Length: 217
View 1 (tube, one colour):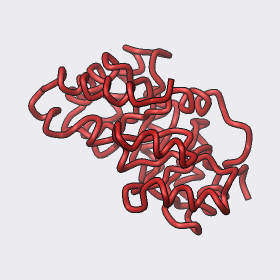
View 2 (view 1 turned 60 degrees about the horizontal axis):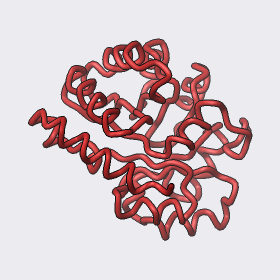
View 3 (view 1 turned 90 degrees about the vertical axis):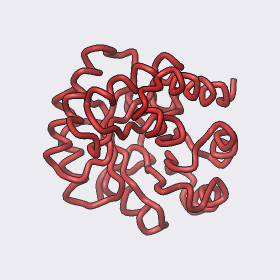
């Protein structure tokens, strides 16, 4: 068994806990992904996850790492192949996110030295993510069960740090945190594909501000 999710956190995980919000970027190009992040940062978001469903994701990560450095906590998501993990970390990603947990993929992700978020939904999947060394367990799709489901999971897994993704918006943020989430992933509700396609960066910034305003002071 590898080091569990209950182990002391890394500096990057500490930053994600402090940031709380992680914007999950799914875009149609590297260029629009970068512009979306610019708009999110302008609205106060500091946790950024560029997904590998975005064409040119590695290029976008490299551009953002150069542009923002330590101003943001930059990661790569929807990691489904070992090569993506390697490419992302070489480009500057400091945490890696997989939608589920597969031992071989988790091992390749761990080998990069990046912080690790592994996806899980059921209790068995949570146990596997912990066994494979997840620093945070990505509860996904969290919208299926909502905060009450997270609260139930924390009964048998009180020491596991969860990052729900899906169903996170300014209204639900307090409920997720009250249920025990240590970080929150937000995709389409924070950075809607329609606004990205329209180049409505001002609208993305305003949404970001509304999410940040919902965090406890």
